[in-house]
Image (tube, rainbow, N blue to C red; front, side, top):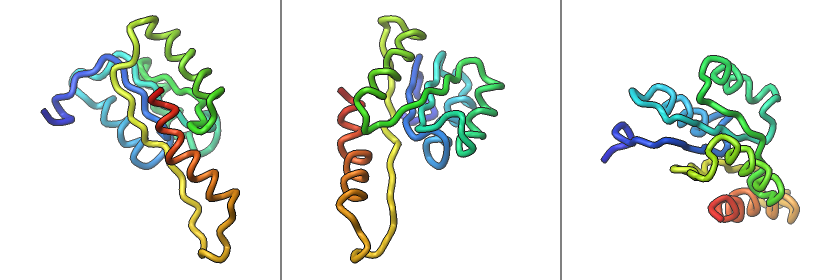
Length: 131
């Protein structure tokens, strides 16, 4: 079955403030039978980069924006608690692990700190989210 036929009661999209993540949120909102709850997460929901998400949330009561840093277990725990407030014990139907980062620079300018941050966000983050 295609994404168009997908029927979910609740979905959480990470990195939902722009790019593919925002596209997923817009897609779910446009579905003939949209999810009862769409949880859109990003690092800074009140920031300038989440403006489009804020606009959508003001028009759609089923869209909930939640602050989330995917590489931070405490942040994941806090976000999960917020999701639970809406879903109770019925649990989440669909998790779209979209958040990712890239700091493009020349190899000789690469730092261990940036490499570690990228790994934590892009590799460890989705694993932590799944747990």
